[in-house]
Image 1 (cartoon, rainbow, N blue to C red):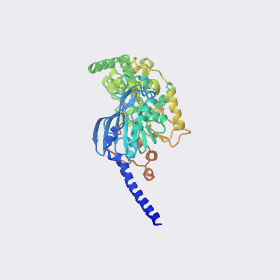
Image 2: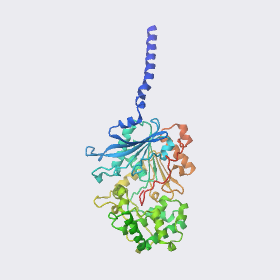
Image 3: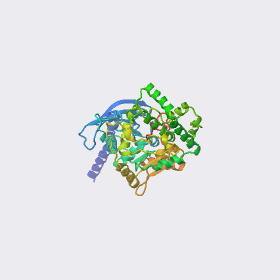
Image 4: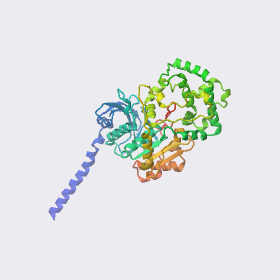
Amino acid sequence: MRKALRWLLALTVLIGTLSMAGPATAAGPEATDIKDRLLAIPGMSLIQEKPYPGYRYFVLNYTQPVDHRHPDRGTFQQRITVLHKDVSRPTVFYTGGYNVSTTPSRREPTQIVDGNQVSMEYRFFTPSRPDPADWTKLDIWQAASDQHRIFKALKKIYTRNWISTGGSKGGMTATYYERFYPRDMDGVVAYVAPNDVVNDEDAAYDRFFENVGTEECRDRLDAVQREALVRREPLEKKYAAFAAENGYTFDTVGGLDRAYEAVVLDYVWGFWQYSLLSDCGTIPADAATATDDEIWDSVDTISGFSAYTDQGLEPYTPYYYQAGTQLGAPTIEFPYIEKKYIRYGYQPPRNFVPRSIPMRFQPHAMRDVDAWVRHHAHHMLFVYGQNDPWGAERFRVGRGSKDSYVLTAPGLNHGANVAGLVPDEKSLATARILDWAGLPAATVTAAKPLARYDAKLDVRDVEREPALRP
């Protein structure tokens, strides 16, 4: 008996020693500076660290294969940023679908869960572009595979739940990522994500513009757009002088006349994408009696006359390439403008990509994603703005989807977010995000953002892209 007691005592002491040693061993990596841990990841290198109170913020390069199917066929450097709070917190994976910002910022889900944030620059947006650029490797699966590799590399450090998010093209990106790698994320929050399932059937957009806002506001916008085409000759002279003064050229689109019409035809769409109904007062009330300068200034403010110059198009070549190969692009009618004033109509993405880059449309790509979301969406939240044209063709969840939602913020535009939802839906969305982030039940029930609003980090402006781009 004494032997047994001595053995039990010794065993108890041993277990106690191991239990104390366990956390110390586990805390080993924690004791290492987070920058060292990030840079210990193969292929990760530091571009810059920027200070921000309560966080560590890193701008990094990560080595990616040009072709994830054949990783031995070359690599490129992809920029990412890490807004580090604590490895014990959830992590939000964000992309806007374009270039990554290198200024510390916090997306809405990051504020809601009070977590870390990883942001990714979309492949082929400079400087994250292979050299030479094989444009056939710019597709939604390759981009989703970029995210997958980044997630796998960082999940070893940020071991808690992950939520992916993005706005507009970034919302599309988060959706495509979930379609191809549904086991990576614990939840998806996709803001104002267009879903152009059938590229040559865009009646939904025409119906949207017939009913958006008020008749008075629609009439004002339509009149200015028409007047800009009626006054094409004098305003194109002004455009030519503007281009000469700024060194703008028009080789890609095929001339100043094509560029001018493209800018003017974006006018009504651009207003509803980025403005609110309350902004209608800024539109000339009587286009017919407005001066040339008033028409020019209104169109330039909303559409931007630099958008379809070579210099304005070049940074967005990857978007137009994707729009013309997989994503699709909208086309709308202009029933209030006589046909004699419209020479080209909404031009296809092919017109905005240099002819040296081959393009072929793949109609199955968006149909596949749409069908997958309808039947397999799990822990997905889609948020749209009532007055945002891009929401005219949207993602929908259907039979087979689980714990997934499509919500609309009344009166809002392309900047719609959870905060803009009606109270009951705002509480629902916030609670689901907190739950997907793996936070305690009491926190989920409270359904409130965990981090205080920070005016610098939590910018709520619309993610504005010039011209007709999501």
